[in-house]
Amino acid sequence: MVGDTLKIEAIPAFEDNYIWLLSRGGDSGCMVVDPGDEGPVQDILASRGLRLSAILVTHHHFDHTGGIQGLKSAWPEAVVYGPKQESIKTVERPVQQGDRIVVPDSGLTFEVLDVPGHTAGHVAYYTAGALFCGDTLFAGGCGRVFSGTFAQLSQSLQKLAALPGDTQVYCAHEYTQDNLGFAQWVEPDNPALLHRIRQVNAQRSHDLSTVPSTLAEELATNPFMRTDQTEVIAAAERWSGRTLSNGEEVFQAIRTWKDKEYD
Ligand code: ZN
Ligand code: FE
Image (tube, rainbow, N blue to C red; front, side, top):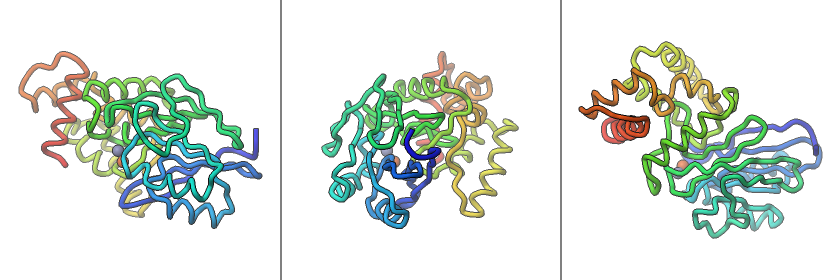
């Protein structure tokens, strides 16, 4: 192992994006996940005297990739990993499900998971109990379906649900408070959800980040992870006005409900 314990910090970007910075002490290089903007990353690297050795990208959207080129010119040695199924010009090492990334100069290893749905080639990175899932799973919600399909996103969330409950979920946006408002439409009587809403409201009133959450919290409160629960199925059927026969149909109904009526 190089350096000390892994440290994971949020670099806020744009309105509500988080670029994740992973570093260890000593002289090991650091890495960033989804650098949509170069400036805030360069600022923190300079102020901390850090050297960038890798960039991990989850999907092609500009708010996750816009800073890569600038960072790469400043740090030519940084290796850029990204999804094999999407065309991102700046990606040097295309990765997909089953790949194991050993980041040079950091001693860190990541497992790659294919999690399509928000986009058709979206990947997530998993290391040492931390999941970097871009716009697939959000705290209290999930991404919209853009270039993927509802069935894909539903299956991707089920795949993530199988990770250990204490997995820390590092998503790419601060959307939690908003997401939980919709979650309450779906499950107004879920006590774990009401508890989480109080907690998140308190955090946001002090401008604190609500990310990471844990997978166990998501399983207990995030309706998109709870499509097998009686209350969620009932709410989805009430909204769509028909009987839904499986988790994917329930997922599609509540994702569509949120798109059309909540935000
Ligand atoms: Zn996106
Ligand atoms: Fe995004």
